[in-house]
Length: 531
Ligand code: GLU
Image 1 (tube, helix red, strand yellow):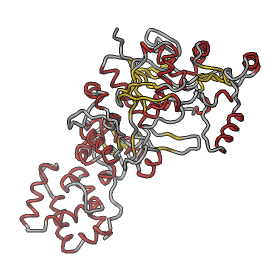
Image 2: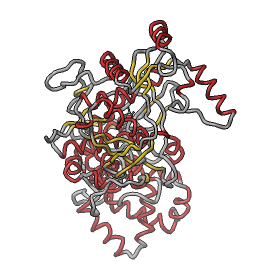
Image 3: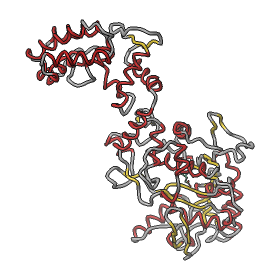
Image 4: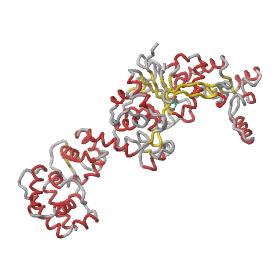
């Protein structure tokens, strides 16, 4: 029987989602959509000690920003899904709200002899650990130690039954079989074998909070939610033998999902896992959205840094997957078509901040002037500039400009920018006159032999009677300088100094036709009075 593809992203709300986590969600999403399957978001919040308020909301918001929208999950376009419906047959999708259903599965394992009750307190376990470490050994709760510990295998039945009634801090542990080789298959890593003697008796359920641990809840929910493939980070590979054994113990091997463990995102130098600290140190975000923790510390986000979600998704997809040819630009829809787990690399994927920026620049180039203008206007407003919808000549004194003026600028500088915020750095002088001049540029170009000529060129521009557009001004302007045999570069740089405050910037004809003759004249007067 072929089953409908159903995959899930199962984050624990223990903090903001790292970009590696977003990549895991993305690969799950692509895999599901390519096969016409379902993508589910399940919140694994059974570890109350590690719960961070706001983390779940952050995760959902980050995935929505990326366009990674679930078919089933805790939140559907801002609607909270609490109860089961045709659309969300397995709701709730938050494990804390599914609390009641796990105990019976833990009991089933105990009854079948696959698990047992353990009564050791944290202190007792700590003492045992210290004792073994003092003897040069490492403590692991498994077949070699369990009979010397306090559990339903080592204690007389009457005793543990009483403890079960009277104590409220016991746990149910998995009874790891002795000396068995677990044979596993991973869609990315191939065949893997592990001997159970290297594994411990993991806690599956805790009486204290009546909650399952990750392992039990994860397996039970994957089974109940009819998950066909588990695609997750390689940090879960060590748990895979236990998960295989749990499927076996429950008698669910027929429908056991296939597994794919994704390699880590590595630091730019390839040495170790990409961490928040690398981001802070080298100046790039490692989180999709900005995150402010309880101490008020701010971690940068791709969204707030000005990345387009399409660029972020594209660059993430390429970190660990390739299409097999040299294509680099993919929309989400194109990724759905092209993605395959077979082309996901086994080795870690090295993060490259320059490449991330390159992606954004590529996406910025393809955006419409209209869209970029809409994105740029808030940046301008934050600088105290007013943008009007009506036509209006640029008003530098009143800091008021028309939207059309902004559009003309965006069109001119779009190709030069990586982020929308760069527009300001590239051409803020099109909104505010320079109040000072880059010293080194002034020293180099504002020399009498140059500026006397430049001032004559300025008069030519001010007296120009043709249409005051770049197209009609540029030719005659250059012709004027050339026919006088004046040094073109030096003269232009002198004018640029007056207009920009520096010797780099847009072409003179572009600038003057944008700002207008009046403002041009003012800037010439200002530089004359200042330098
Ligand atoms: N809750 C686990 C996590 O936080 C999920 C691991 C899995 O996908 O099985 O990563």
